Amino acid sequence: MTRARPVALSVLRNYAETSGRAGRSEFWNWTLIQTAIFGGLYALGQITPTVATISVGNLTLIYFLITLSPTVALATRRLHDSNRSSLWLLLGLVPATGPLCLMVLFALPSQKIDNKFGEAPTQTAPKEIPSWATYYTEKGVLKDHAILQTSRLAPKRPEPTKRQKEITSYYQTRVLKLQS
Image (cartoon, rainbow, N blue to C red; front, side, top):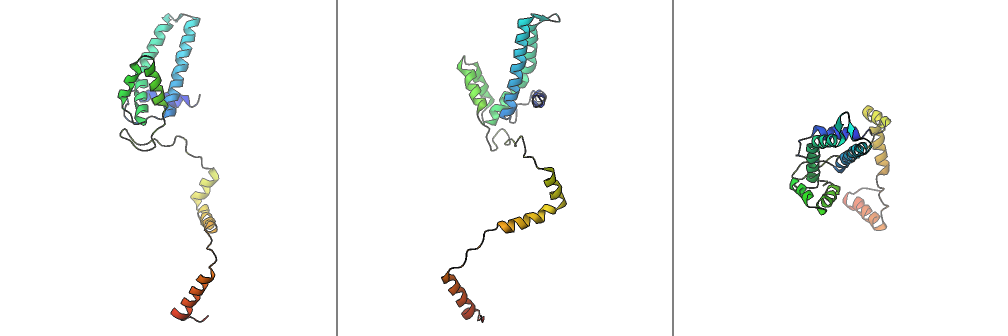
C-alpha cells in the first residue's frame, strides 16, 4: 500500500484543482482506494449498524461528501488528459449506459502531446541509473570510454571498387601530379 498513500494525498491536496491533467494510474489508484473504503464501510454496516453512536449509513454519507469534491476534480483532470471537456461528466447522469461510457472514457490512454488543458504528463517512473554509472559519469571517466566505444561502433568504409581505385590513381597522378 506504499503507492496508495501518495495518490490519496495528491488527490486530497488538489481537491478543487480542475485545471491540468491526471494520468490513468492516478485516477484508477484513487478509484481502487475509494472502492476499498466504501466496501469496508458496507461490510461494517452489515456487521454492526452503529459505530460509537453514529450509524454506518451516516458515516458513509459523511465520507462520501468529504471525498466528492476531490473525486469530481480528479475525474475532470482525467478527461482533460484525453482532450475532453469536463462537460462529459454529465454523461454519468444518463441511466445505465452513462456511467459505463464514462468508464470507457476514463480508461482511454493519455495524449502523448500537449493539449489545450496542459502539458503532456511526464513518465511516472524514470529509468533507474545504476549508482556506478552516475559516479563514473560525474568523474568524467565514462566520457572517454564512450568516445572509444563510438569509434569502434562507427561503420566501416567499404573497400573501394576497381573503378574507384582507377579514378583515385588518375586524380593523384594527373591532377595533383603526385608520384606514386
